[in-house]
Image (cartoon, rainbow, N blue to C red; front, side):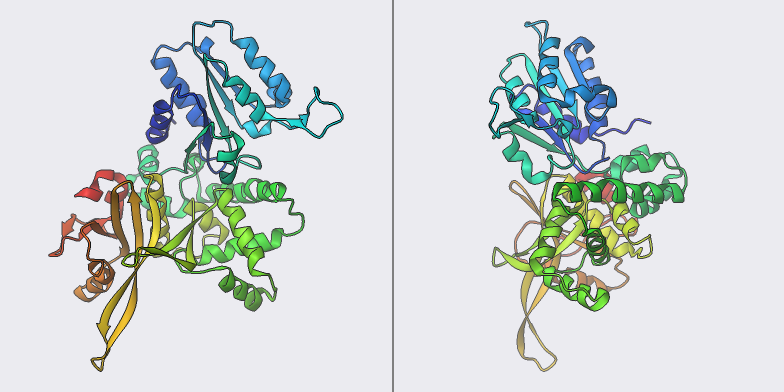
Length: 433
């Protein structure tokens, strides 16, 4: 089964031969190798590039073990560059597998040679175009800009969007949404035949890959139970405002454990760096400034979130909000949680100021959208409640309410768009109806 990842393929095409190392990052098992070795390779062939001019190495393959030595890797690639009149496309998967070794040319010193040195050296060869993937210990998000000394061009790949999932879904399409909000969009989930198989696969990803990577990178030897509990707490509070202080109180009351705020904050940052979690800050829409704690955390894949809770807490409202957040990130928006302060009157007629939340403030260049995830609007009272914050903003940017039901999109008297979640996810142009 071939899954089209046109959004990411087009990003690689746009960066072709731009003089930089194209670094494909993302949570492990989200499809980086497939994008590079299958889809991008096919594209190169379609433009007339022969396989002789495409050098591929999967560095997690035991047959290529010797090339985890950076000197062997550099020597091998250079040996393949036999025609100076043609461009060679070098595709290296799991580049972080290349070890750091003592510099043999500077014996007695602590200087080491690693994959960054090899890639920076290859970049100086005019007929070489470099593409690498990385996903664990050395290739987490905060390292990308520094590892390549300003010569790295990151392409972030995510688990499948709903549109990608839907296009590859071979069963009754009426069940696509149910399966997506339950098991998420990790590509290999689509090939698992039963719910038990899907659950087992997601559990293996968490327990044997993600947590092991994080513990290895940060030299955490005996804190796995705390990491597990922290992930469970965040899973239960998806879509709710929280911070390390609140989480600390949960640990104390539920687990009887005292953990410092800065320790919890550091562990949360580890999860973010590993692409497991996203952190959404609060933004004062009228004040045009960011507000500190608390904030919201979302999972990069809702299937992973659900697995953490053994699929017990299947609140479609919170899962839908998480999916919307991920979709906006996939569409390259910067996404914040909005706060709008309104002047109202209490039951005695006295003036008071109240804060109302806008689920998402999405910015991309000069574009801005205010989006409310409402799940259901059964009556006029509920509609007024869900749109109070949107109506209080007062600017001319587009405002959208996304509901669970499959409705015909419509606008109210103040121009707010109401649209069903599946249409929103399947049709990117629907935001501008």
